Image 1: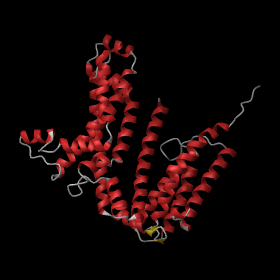
Image 2 (image 1 turned 90 degrees about the horizontal axis):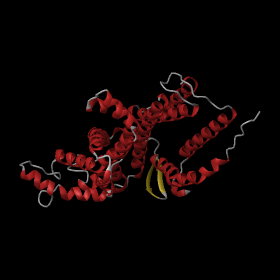
Image 3 (image 1 turned 90 degrees about the vertical axis):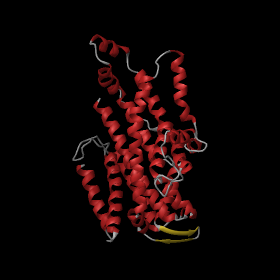
Image 4 (image 1 turned 45 degrees about the vertical axis):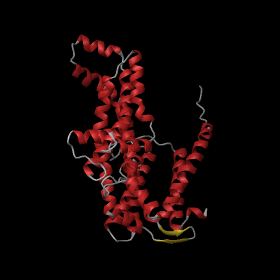
Length: 289
Length: 90
């Protein structure tokens, strides 16, 4: 009888990754934990304050507002981007040169750097030199993203939808292409309607892709910084100040390293929790299959 | 290491986490665990329960800090009890 020999030497192959992650993530995170319990004046002057900064952060109404704004933003863009991405993927051609051309056109917004996206929309939305701003003015809408919070919000949401819906569309497109033709043949034999094909063939087959899409878009939108920073600078007032921007204002603008470190850790724990919930959901769904 | 601004409590915290991870690894080698379902609504391994316990303990500490002025050691004791319950029956 043969016995299975276990060999754990392959773990050494993971060692370089572990070392890189240690330097790029674990050691900085440990430093942030150290900062979060101290009042730091300079490199040689700091005082231990215990959990004081955590209490301050947990009771800070500005940060509560930023957190609510952040969740509101993430859920808004998910509600728009996911159905829109599916719709775009369903409408894209499946064969020939038009399919390749369409893929390239759809992917273009994804290739643009975040700060450039912010700048594009900053100009695009201006009434004097921007096409969108001028158009809104021409149809009689009093639109000004620099002074009106609703306009600022809608512009930030619109910008994110423009930038990231292609990602969802491309994911869905690849999911749709992976459905075998026999499913559609069976649907044709049963004279299934277009809606029935979508509801009972395409949507169930897209579930895994959509979970990945939701996870990616949620995490990315939850950490959004550059685009709203360039477009609105968090304003007017603080109406588009999201968590990462509030954090940067505290850490770099005010140089409050202790409270900013405590804030970072709370932010990190929220992201960790959401990631874990998504990861567990995905793993359990795969297990059920 | 001075640039990391170490303090005794944070050093003890990380040593504690390190000891737990080494201990869990040793435990896993000595007696490999099997996924099971306890009072949590999902199948979990020992490591899963440890992660859930540590994450929930962090949130318990945060809520405790936000809502009370009592000594944080009370929250730590509560979390230790929660961890034992979770690891044994979770």
